[in-house]
Image 1 (spheres, helix red, strand yellow):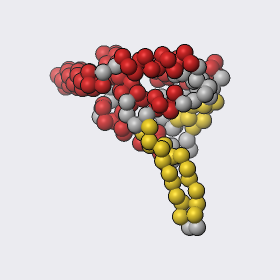
Image 2 (image 1 turned 45 degrees about the vertical axis):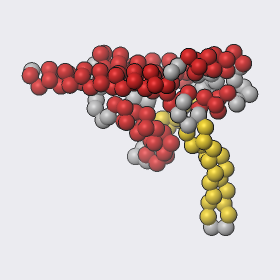
Image 3 (image 1 turned 60 degrees about the vertical axis):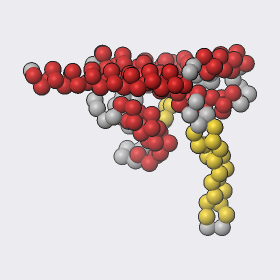
Image 4 (image 1 turned 30 degrees about the horizontal axis):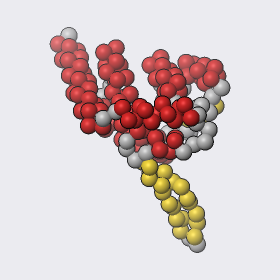
Length: 180
């Protein structure tokens, strides 16, 4: 729970725009006094999904697969050593997906007769942020400099290396538990 609060605070500090709303599922990592206090202190509206309705947040659920499970699997990480590697891994994954990987975003949804027609835009989150008028010129320049300073191949190799390190730490932890 404290890790979640720290991670949220780090994300909010790094974002070029102010967070207005936090929407979560009903997991105890989000539904707790630490997160509630953080939201109150930062003036963030906190909403949550209905219990046992994972379709309430399908976009988030899809990101759980592509940004969490695909890199870390379904294991339970609960040691300081794992948390440290997960933090570094999360930061690099975030850079890769926000600066370089295009995503689909629903841009138009209209009903024509009995059918719903959807049109999507495909772009990187980086490019979408650059187009927002409310983002300061300084933030945009900082983001552009960050993107230009990162080599995608090197970044991808570092992500792979951290994933392997996380595997080794987890396996060592399991061996230790099994021998006790």
